[in-house]
Length: 99
Image 1 (cartoon, rainbow, N blue to C red):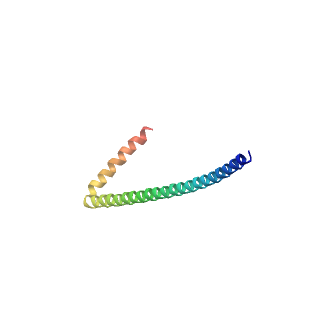
Image 2: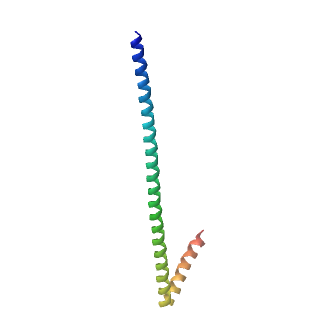
Image 3: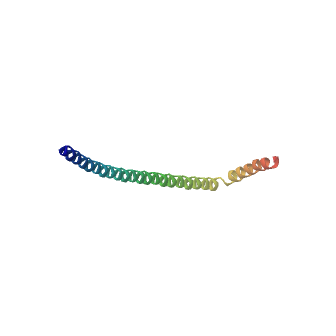
């Protein structure tokens, strides 16, 4: 009977060691997964920011080009520009007068 108790104690000690080892392994896996998720989130944020900055720069370039184009059109055809401005003003005036 005494040998059975010693065998059980040895098995319990072995189980404790195994559980401790499993706990440490799970902790390492969790830490690694968390670090990987943080890295991926950071990389995604950097990529999104770069895309946003590029879109902003493209929109700004398009706006400047459109302004320059309009400015050139006004310089080449000042009478047409005045006529268009008067027409737009008249239409805006009609809409405002209705309210």
